[in-house]
Length: 118
Image 1 (cartoon, helix red, strand yellow):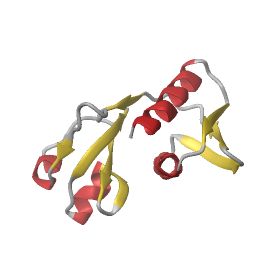
Image 2: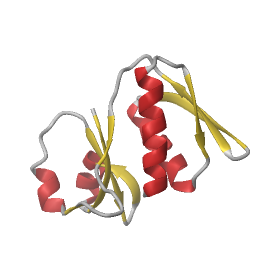
Image 3: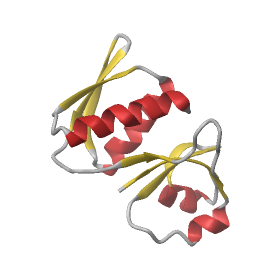
């Protein structure tokens, strides 16, 4: 997930500098991560052109944080997900793919917490 942290850092810089378009490198997990952000409404859409992905941002201010790092992984079970009441979303890598914590609760699965967004 180290390659995903690069995408998260680029998105944070684009949001903080009020850019409309952000260019990130193409990664398969990165595209799945961007699909989750589109479903949540934090970005409008994205286009893949070669080895670059053009991300078109909303006017919505958000902050992405990397939770799991290569040296320190963070795993959450289904039971601990039910107790999560903080605002925002957790984006998790589960056996069903990249999901938000709400979708993981519906499917009764736990997994590795990749990022948090609020």
